[in-house]
Length: 113
Length: 114
Image 1 (cartoon, rainbow over the protein chains, first blue to last red):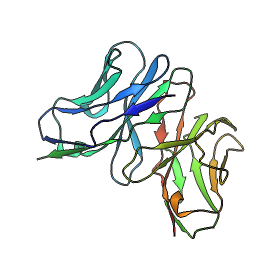
Image 2 (cartoon, each protein chain N blue to C red):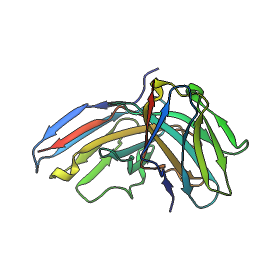
Image 3 (cartoon, each protein chain N blue to C red):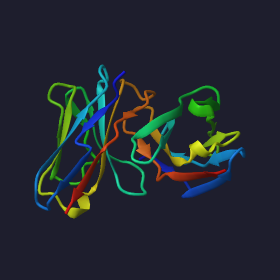
Image 4 (cartoon, helix red, strand yellow):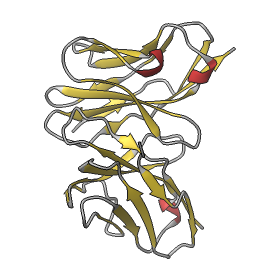
């Protein structure tokens, strides 16, 4: 079975400050990891993915994520947050051999001006 | 290019009625997924199609839920004898084949059962 945990329901950060959204996962074998963002009344938008290789993955809108195999984590980061980054963020995982993508419960990010 | 299209965007139905939700995936995407999202929660997997066949339907909650993809493109999620607990946003996604291919989601159908 595969699972994802996002321990924070909400993260508050001031505009211009660094943003981190935490994610840990559990999966058999090598993981495929993804981050998605959801704006109000919209579908999920793909941000970035980790497959293999470099542990620091760069994605859309200045976001990046750091893969840590020993801690089974895949935290999302942005060096300088914008008010427009306020949204719901989801981490997701799938097994290398499977295709079902399992999502975490989501973290709401609020960036204050 | 065109993204994943879901219709209707909103559906209100009475308890006990039958509903159909439609998904039109991105052209060329062989994989199609249905998820359900309740307020404040992450998307919950329902079913995955590879081509015309359901490769994994382990997320369907019970036999009132059924999905088809007869020609390997458009898919329909069917819910019989709807219950108030079925109220949620139903999300459809499509992707290229392979575990490293990201899912591309539609905007969802908000189903309300009264």
